[in-house]
Image (cartoon, rainbow, N blue to C red):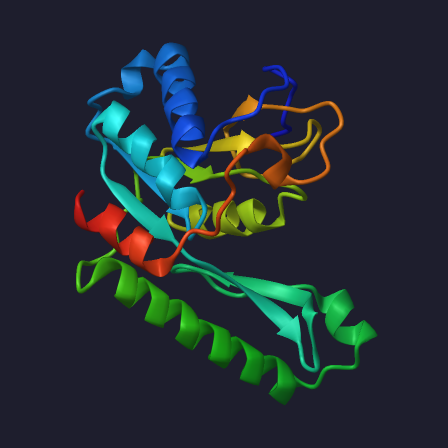
Length: 220
């Protein structure tokens, strides 16, 4: 699925406003999603969770966090050779592994480290609650925006492994033409023609904290 330019260029005050606008768009486009027991809303942690909270409230659907961890090249962690997501197998770029001459032991060590951090965050966010099941569900995957779409592609790939009915991607902002294989639909609240970063579409783009995620999930 490719992101089309469905909506114009606008700036949101914050993630809350983006979430309310996405909730409006989803309910208008798909009224059958409201109070549908098959709908599950997942916010990419951390920035996607406040946006997802408004969608979940409007649709009267359960809310959960979805955690993704980048697999960084040892000693050059800003470069990723893959990613690992909640409940999914690690996705690895064999080409990047070859280009940097990474050994199997190095790859395994990074995966183990990031999976441990992923599990720690999930445990902290849910505080003992089990993950929300997504098998045979209509899953709405939410983020405050996507630049390259790489995190969203990892999320969708991981969720698709659990055989949902449908996957709808909902983002606050993003560039047209971004492809998310495996997504059945992409809903984007604003598509700036001169897109260069997610933060350009927000007046307040303050980093979301772990505590904020915990609080949002604990009220659902």
